[in-house]
Length: 397
Image (cartoon, rainbow, N blue to C red; front, side, top):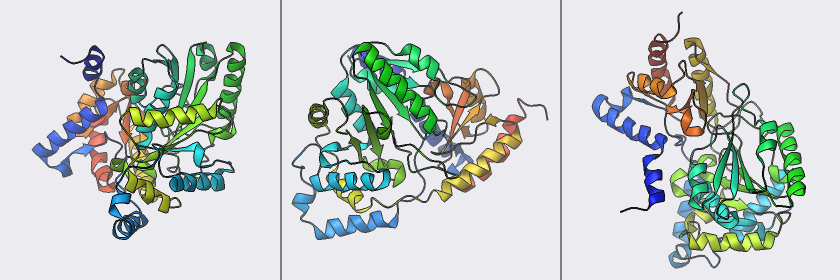
């Protein structure tokens, strides 16, 4: 019999994955070209050519035993970590070194490493709804408690007054995701400054350390000149988790990193614990080939013009249908208000038109649906007439 904790997790298994599997089923019945699957945030833009070139150079030019072997440190190759630090310093005016970087098995692996490092049973982690639903699972992995801040559905910026009220002596971490999944919103510098001031005051009030964890897989995917603040510059106890899944279109390669700055309280101890956590969680080390690949591609980015074209077409098309949503500043998601209160029923109705959406309750924000537009442009153009038919069920034109 499986563990009691896993029973709950299995029962509440990811709606996103379930919808993706439903898409495969519908495709087998109607043909993939007739199914409009907007469920999974799986990049559809190829990795930059430099990634392929780096892989070929490494595989053909390096000793395979060394290339595919364990790293000397669970935190990754020293030269790769230094290269990442140098790149960040050049971009953001920081002063990181090798010691501040831990290579991870994607951003998800990095979040699990830092939660293992920081959380005691009963510690609280605050998340701002809407948020990536797996934050709850990652917190639960280490017997933490996820505390939600309700969504501001006008702007989807964090509700800071409620945030201040919900910080307690048990608050160990606050997790933010900007650009945000599922809204595409970028948290403004003013928001970050106010958030940092609240956390500083609460640390002093309670005599505790409260860590700000910045989950940044979408940092490079921004539009219209939007600026994404680098959070270590605003609050000392900030830890950054990054992934190359979106920035280099490498989601299946599972490669990312943590930044643990010297300004973090007891930083050396936190860095050492994260190194050990990487091993004891079974990751051992981030994929060795991919560590060296990303070190060669630190200045490369995926071509977001593809996503931007999709964003514009889908946003304008849905508005014409009568749907309500804010225009995303980053990532590759639209968060659309359901025309009925029960957004799960709306998702079921959309399935009748072979449109697959994810209910907002999966992100702590019922009444909305997420549309991932990291799909072929032709999929969006093909889907818009179906959305028009769907809209006729709900809107008087």
